[in-house]
Image (cartoon, rainbow, N blue to C red; front, side):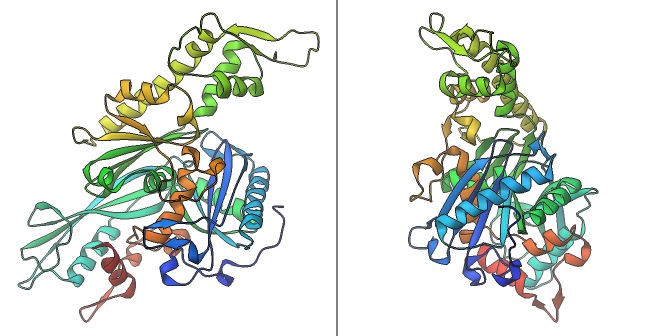
Length: 445
């Protein structure tokens, strides 16, 4: 139960990175409008030989208290979280006290900052990279928003872009582009309090499209360019990748539950009846014989004498297709207006539970005019069938990120503690880089 007393996260370690040897287990918690899922990984679940993971315990329960991109009932949400975590604990036979949450709630958005530092006569070294990171961090000003990812996108030397590792290069200036992904501060605070009610420590927050990408995209897709679209119950979000870097994220508070509501209104049936129709018979594209096939759904209300709602299957498509198409078109236009240029041939990968609706992939091909495939957790081969589909990419992605990176320019602990300020910038003393910056440089360059 959510009220079960749990220990402090300090009892089990403070980090998300199993390579640091500080966390006996890592728990990933996906909080959405339709479901809450939890995956637990033990240290031996990191398989460096083939860069996969083994999940020790997995669970999912129906979500409660989440709607419209926010938590609207903390008690209900905390209870659902507690149930999901306890089930995963039983499966893993290992307790957890802290979780890393992945979600698309909180009006998530990305923001770029740039920094440029002068170079001396010597080749670029770690101290120069740390100065550039520090200058970029000092520029982050996001009122009423909480940064949750801080990721370097690209380096440049004397304006020449596309440099992956500038160390040992010579020039007059070193440039850095930094991507900051943030969420609404009030939603972050509510999420943190909700975890406290479930007696869990919040060890980090990850944007669902970001970690879904880590689970569903191939290395070549991240390098050559791809968009991972995470289609959840209450939101649809996207992460744009290119040159092995996250370039942009976009989020809409429209998802699969809106399709369900449209069906319930359009066909005068209950929400439960609409969800059943959508799951069993729904499609965003026309199919053969749908005009002659009749579907039955329960009537809305408590009138026992009312007969079932009987409609042709074709009518179901006329309700579903416009909503899905509108959502994809809005996302496409948002990405275009953001100035995110995609390479020719860059494809789309769909994740999230709503992506499994028949016809969504074909509709996405038509809207974006690009190749589209359905994604799943590719580097978690031992997941049970019930937890290995597109709906669980984000949960698996949290564990993959913890195991293999990318590590970020600011630690999860600092991000959870407060908004980034100039004081969080890396410090350099007598030419030496502080430990966490040096560690980041080792692991990412």
